[in-house]
Each structure stands twice: as C-alpha cells, then as structure tokens.
Length: 149
Image (tube, rainbow, N blue to C red; front, side, top):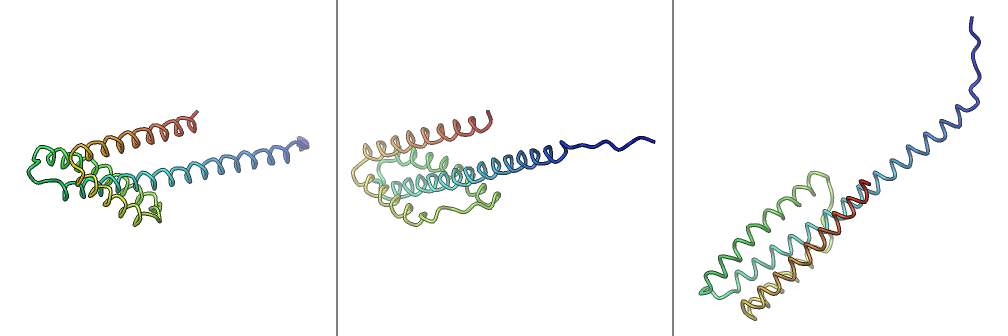
C-alpha cells in the first residue's frame, strides 16, 4: 500500500493557474473591445465615404461624364467596403457609433460643397480621404501585429 504524498505546492500552482487564466481572459477582453472600436470607426468612415461620393455624384455637372463614371466606380468600391463592415457589425454584435447621424450630415455637406467648387475640389477631397483611410488602416494593422507578437 502506497502512502499518499503531501503536495504543499498544490495551492500555489492553483493560484498561479487562476492568475494566468484571468490574465488571458483580460487580454481577450481587451482585444475584443479594441476590435469593436476599430470596426465601429471603420464602418463610420466607409459610410462617410459613400455619403460623400453620393452627394458629389448628385451635385456634379451632368456633362462631366468621365468624372461621373469615375465617381460611380469609386462608389461601387466604397459600397463593397461598407457592406463588409456592416456585416462585421452584425456578425460580432458590435454597435455602430452613436455619432453616425452627425457624420452622415457632415459627409453629405462635404460632398455637396466640393462638387459645387468643381472637379478639382472633388478630386482633392477624395485624395485626402483616401490618404487618411490608408494611414488609419496601416495603424490598425500595426496594432494587430503588436497583439500577435
């Protein structure tokens, strides 16, 4: 018959396992919160891009056929991006930003005003928006790479 050995370290191991479990859980919670924020911000940005383009199309001189074709092409691309983020919001049960109605009004105003200033203003605004979005997405990618390291 073998004697039962005493394991005085067992409670210590249990304590450390609980700490590790809490740390992992907290890390996953932090990542989930950041993903929620990123998707919410990205959705708002894509919605604004769509609203700006729609307003520019509606306000651009109809005789500027080539420019309107380019704007429609960009709108199609932005609609794909918007649909993707709307799907992510639904799939992960994230909430859209509460400021969406404000951003939509601002975006429509930007589209209308730039179209009234002419095609050069339209192009400049689109270039500025695309540069900002590209910088924003690069920053998000760096954050995700940091989490994975």
